[in-house]
Image: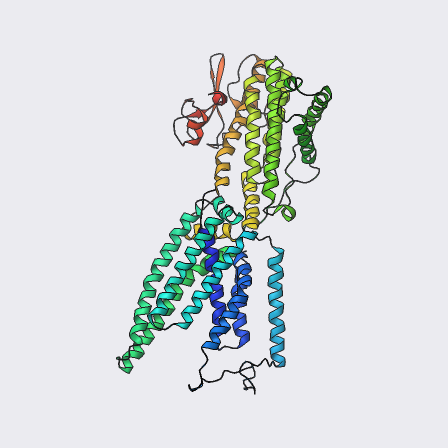
Length: 594
């Protein structure tokens, strides 16, 4: 995975500003409950957008920050012989209490407010504790970055004049440098994976950050100049008042420029993707398929055909594998689906288990394809089509009910099976062709829509990567565009290639059955409905029926390519017709052999 420091910079900046707010609360003369309420509101505002990491790091760095704030507050007290500042009010009642300035004396109202604050903090902490925050022990390094930021902020409070300004301007640079160094050491964490999942996101965020930052920087420089002019002792009273008003107006304008766009993005991040309503009810055969996969991998780890396995395995293992195949072919006749559970499976560890399952599924697919190739080489083409059909059914099952990763694996497995059927379709018996045509139409009818898979995957990534997908969607909205992750884009490109092969296979088998029954090819595909097909197959790239025309004793059957245009039967390979976006190529069943 390529290195990307952006997520760590964002987390460090958010945590740093929270600590800066905490320092203000420690040094302010406001009522203690109001100061605590401001800090709590800033923390609570992160919870609805699932930005949990800054809350965790704030809590970890807060003890040191509070101690440093106390040190600064004591240093800022008037020394002996200096005029005493006006004492702040010690309680909400407005009466000054006797005793020390720092004596811990609370009224009943203060005790009630403290109870309310403790309850709110406990509720927020419990909510964060229940969430699955993508952290590991190495991410404690970011706390050191936050402590450095807190110390820099304290240095600002101890300086005066232009050094204070220079230190304040140096804080973002220090935060970015520390975050960059930390991210370089920790680029393979789950947070980094979340940003890699949205590869184009960092470019969008850089653009938005530069546009906001450039304008804010110009206004900030103007504010400093106005403030400096307002503080000049050489000014007359009226001119100083006008300059002060100008400085305040500039400050308000800067805040509006900085916070209004941020508020718009925040509002967009409040609502994340929701888990879709699942259409799958009733019994699910996937548990039986999973058990068969586990046993088959143990019996045949090299993914050999049974004929080749006889040379290395025992007779008992070969017999058991043959029976396992027979049972599996029956189970696959009923479409199953991935048993994905949002309550149990929305966790970062799910991907490690998913990778192991993917390896086993592909191993079983290779076994079925090897068995189909062995049967075809021996002249048993009907049996070869059964194993190829089983691979297609396996791929269709894996594509249902899961994530886009499952769908990508299912598409690859189904492509392995369809390739075998394409190669033997002219040689299979008529009885087998009828069964095969009916089975392919059932696969077509049981397809899961891409929108459902994408919605399920979006809800999953929202739970795993928290604020990252939401911020990405908000930035895309700010730029006036729609965005989909790389996996979604790959699915949008590979699903049509899978579907076009199935549609052409259905039409081809129906034409062959009609030719066998009537002695000639049909004039149009509409003549095959409903005797041989439930409906005319639709080309996924154009949304129109696949193209068919007779040519003497034979026929020509194809679909439009990626350009969606009929190019007169000009065929190429997959790379030319699908993936390079070239125009001028159509797709037929022989594309798998080119």
